[in-house]
Amino acid sequence: MRLILLGPPGAGKGTQAQRLVARHGIIQLSTGDMLREAVANGTPIGLKAKAVMDAGKLVSDDIVIGIVADRIEQPDAARGFILDGFPRTVPQAEALDSMLAEKGLKLDAVIEFKVDQTKLVERILKRAEETRARGEPVRKDDDPEVFKTRLEAFNRDTAVVAPYYAERGLLVAVDGMKPIDEVTRDIADVLETV
Ligand code: AMP
Image (cartoon, rainbow, N blue to C red; front, top):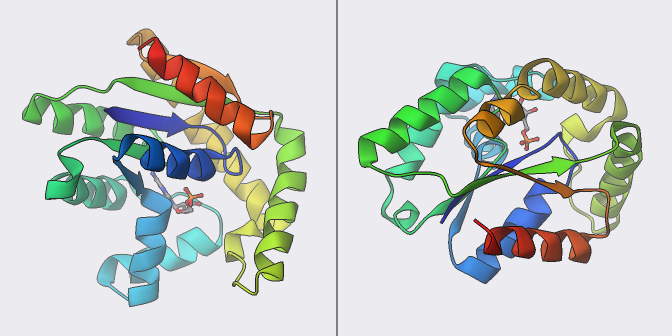
């Protein structure tokens, strides 16, 4: 199974991706995680991406497309994957189409998390508090001001990705404002139909 989880930052994509991993035994490919790892390891990509990420802006399509292309070549991606945080622009979506077409593969579904953006800031503050309470470092881009920039980037560049997949008959929506377990159930229901 090959899925995309689409929605603004803080919509719960990462949480649901982890549950899908556990349920379906496929891998989660989060470009945000991959970029954070590159930053932590000080790789050339990490060095380029760090300031952009800290500011809540989008890393260039070339960089992100490159890391996804490399990652889906890995043997553990052969059984399927959940893309979380990619594609975030139409050029990224087009590049993914070409990568999959070259391999003779297709997407099964694109799950759009519908959310109330005014409530997302509250949610992100809570996520930062919980992370701090666990004694873990809080993501720099979960700062409320940077979070607003991330939302703006979503509305400017990523909101057009949902219609892209709707036109291709792949888009299904879930209500991302429901409690986590309900969203998980709704996704399971949606996946029965694709
Ligand atoms: P995320 O963990 O998905 O919220 O991503 C964290 C940050 O990584 C974003 O704010 C961007 O700076 C960068 N990033 C992650 N995925 C992408 C992508 N597909 N395109 C551009 N930038 C990305």
